[in-house]
Image (cartoon, rainbow, N blue to C red; front, side, top):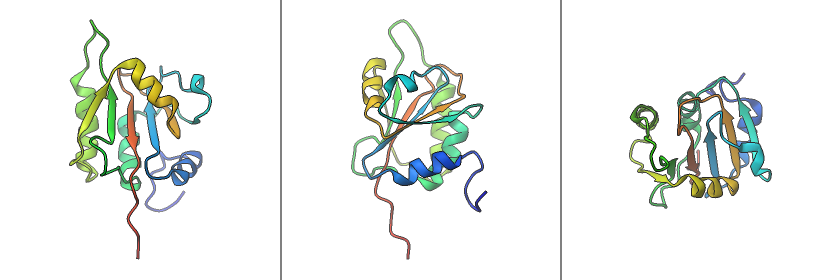
Length: 146
């Protein structure tokens, strides 16, 4: 255990996040996401932990990319299906409550989201069971600490 770092962040997750560079992407995937299928990514398991919980743990440590239109991407509903507004609402609350509320969230078609996830540096397979619970975060430049 380390001071100031949530116990929800495993040593493997902390290590992978530390190795990310600006522009790299992190996928917080729901429990049904085909993370292992994508193969070339770093996959870290966070079973039993929701995406919302991980957002609260990760966002204080993770600089979002301020040089792109939207460093936050979720999956849009497939035709004939609907999004649960509570899912996105809980994510937006996490961004707001961790000082990241100024960033826009965008949505991406399901298979385009999968293609983008295949190129991500890191996929965290969570225990999230809510439909369309996946989110991509694009890492920005971490400010210098003096």
